[in-house]
Length: 115
Length: 113
Image (cartoon, rainbow over the protein chains, first blue to last red):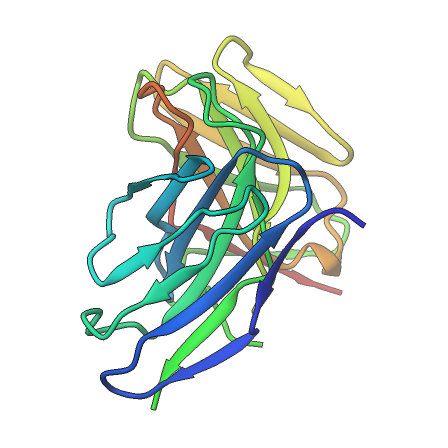
């Protein structure tokens, strides 16, 4: 059963704590993305990765970090520097990051809440 | 589940009606457009896409129309069902050399039985 999985579904962060959100895909896609969604807002791009061991900042990368050690995995760390982390986080993937536009497929999301 | 649709434009229709959801995109150079459906508390689900060399594309019960002159995209849903209730948003690829997408804020569709 191919797709994108994200865990956990809900995550609670204490002040000053770093937390890591998991994203795994078995679609054999090269490109992966992280978005943040706030109520009434469109998706905003945090980081994206075209290929293993390479990633680029998106529009709102401050306070976040990522790694791409494996093709299937693209974890996102929300650091203590992110002062307003409460949001719905979505991971997506696409076949590649070629210049002609590719469909992005999304995981089920992780909701991060601050204690 | 949690709502992602707070303060969004809302379209309310009766079951069986046809629905039209509109989207104004920002970049005249955009060459690829996607419509997504998002149910409360879930990730967006791909519905249909269209490239800029087309004006219309049809899927199962859905049609996307692209008007490049006025930078307007619409999603038509035929015979709308209660299961179609969700937030719908469009995304555009701005043809900036790589395939990141820019997303609209969305429209909430409410279907009454």
